Length: 139
Image (cartoon, rainbow, N blue to C red; front, side, top):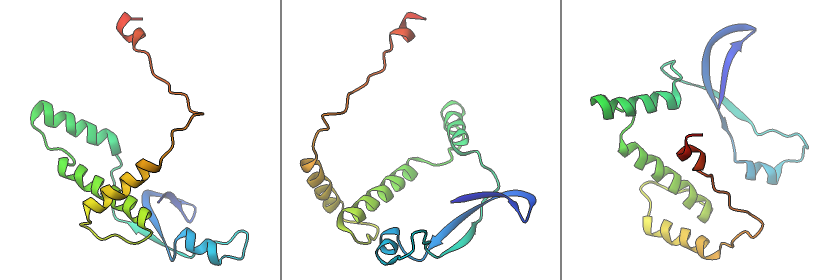
């Protein structure tokens, strides 16, 4: 995604664009012969409400919902939807194919567990834990 604020040398309201590519990077890499080749794409303007409050607005609305019964930007169901999409993307990568929603959750779990079983602990990584001593002592 690209946010553009200048078009033809004239400042504009910020607009959000997304580039839709004709093929995946993996497909392009298999056929590309040019060292600086580029996948053909279509530049599409994404319609928005013009606001760009992002996480601040979500957190403020969440606090308002708790404190004053206000309306949240997205309820818990949106979190479930986001997790479902994330899991579908992982399953697609696991199986190297497109996944339709709803997908077989047992299949996802089994594929995930295959990777858990075959994962290796990284011996070169040192665990780092933050100390809360300064917070508790008032320093």
